Image 1 (tube, rainbow, N blue to C red):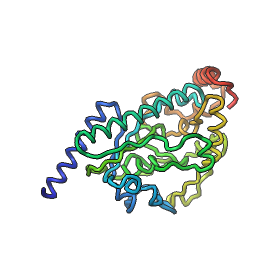
Image 2: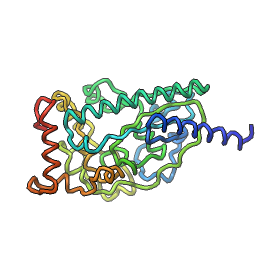
Image 3: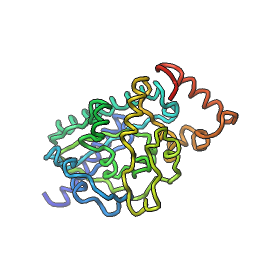
Image 4: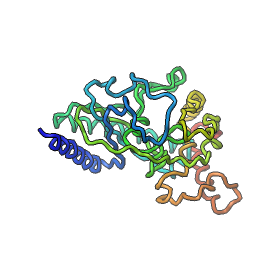
Length: 293
């Protein structure tokens, strides 16, 4: 097979998978060769003091892996706006379950076509107590989405996408198939508005210095974040979600008419926003132990 023919095969398989994802109602899909973990592209929008350690690379978790497929499902903004609440808790659990199911189905779809593939769970830890001891999973879907050209890192250490901002959950499939990769995303989508910093209830997101453009450093206080999730879990209102709902990035804001960010900070006396806050408070008041968040 010539180089041109191999390229066509990689492209054809990608087109097949994109059609399959469309049929499965998966709105975001990205493809990355595993060698991007070894040699990160120079034009990534964020720079790092330390890169991903080798033991977290896909080819060192599944040695047959040649391509990482990343899928993303959105968190619907008006539901997320009630967070923390039982409503957002249920949305989060539903999206997580769907990600697991869809990733498994895609891996089996590839297996039946003769391409050895495995899915990864959207989370890689058993309980928040585990995160408090070691706040890492065995594989980072955020970095996979980043390397698959799906977005850039925001100040809250989550991936921002043009379509949904940070309001999206990811998981991955490792496959032995060589699939045409996506171009890396070169734009830094973070506006540096610092709304996530200001509104974080446990101050887990410290302000970044002016050196952000020179070096991106993961500063998120993961322990404080996990401790808040532990408290909210006891009240059946986890996860927190505040940094996600106040981020101005994402086309979903147009769809849901949420482009005016004052909705999250204006006083209750503001008639234009009072109806939203009244609705959020109603949701927060039911389905959990208390609404003192």
